[in-house]
Image (tube, rainbow, N blue to C red; front, top):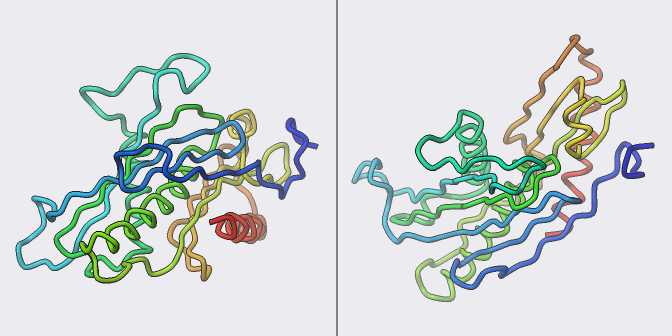
Amino acid sequence: MRVDGRKNNELRRISFTHNFTKHALGSILVEFGETKVIVTASVDLKKPKWMDESDNRGWVTAEYSLLPASTNTRCKREREKVSGRTQEIQRLIGRSLRACVDLEKMSGMTITIDADVIQADGGTRTASICGGYLALKDAFEKLIKLGELKENPIIEPVAAISIGIVDGEIRLDLNYEEDSHAQVDSNVILTKSGKIVDFQTTSEGEPYEFEKMIEIFNIAKKGIEHIISLY
């Protein structure tokens, strides 16, 4: 039995509150247990400056931040320099969301996903991806109503979940206490059809067997299928 009473293959309580803020075209409050993230989608009707003039794609990018009181000890705001961890998470969120979008159908448009963690208890990056997808979806639907888009660029939904091996057992959707003691730490990101966007898995101690990796993936896949059913 886990510290919060869940079974090893059981997700935390998950909720998505749409239109959480009024200014962004898409805004979601994501809750995975005690992890809470505000995710917004802001739209700029022009392509990124770095993109070639002949490139007909739009773009989806992301920024991620842990707010100072989101952890048990205050973390500093990254005002001047973004940490390597933050850069990695931002790239992961952006890459994951671009994987589910036909960028040519949003030509000349940049959407920035902002994920601000207001309370962290493990799985903040995977919660941000799930909320990012929904914020993006809501923004696209509003852009169609406004006449800025002809059709929805989304190819299929995407979702993510954390999973790992703790005390020799595979456990889904790790909270902070479990994550900090995990022997193996993984993040799995899949589309609704089961295509792999990202599968990060790291042994924090001794190496583990290939069969365990397959089991980790299959349990995560079932968890992601449930998350997408909540969309």
